[in-house]
Length: 133
Image (cartoon, rainbow, N blue to C red; front, side, top):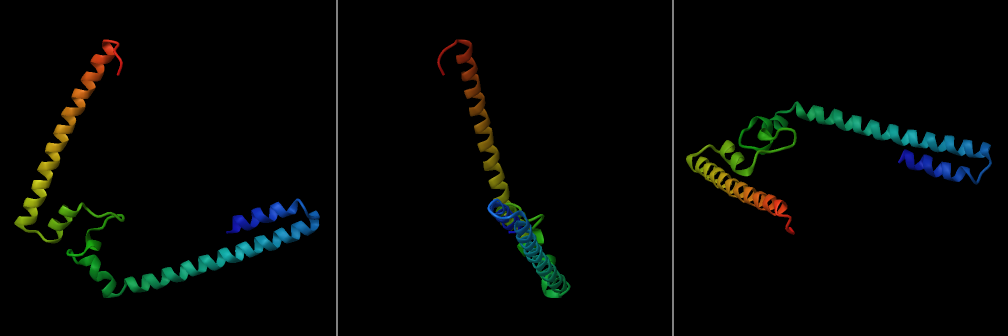
């Protein structure tokens, strides 16, 4: 916002007397700084409110309960759904689902790798024979 105000003021300076333009520019910069200070103070007050809330038991309840997503969240990321299900509710059924999914992924990756190797060999053979791709 402040940059926009300054840029707009500089655009208008070309059409004004330099002395008047400098007064206008200084007022715009002052206005921009005032807006910036109000924004920073509101952010600071929101931070103070959130730190007070974090001290309460309700705010910490989700962070200490392994059955919630917040407990397992790291840097804004959650584990994949099947792993999260097993972590939140350890059971044989959830473990079997995770293992089955892992085996399916492993098989698909092997198939894709074999296919890529075959395509790479075919491409190399075509290049050696100077044929069109």
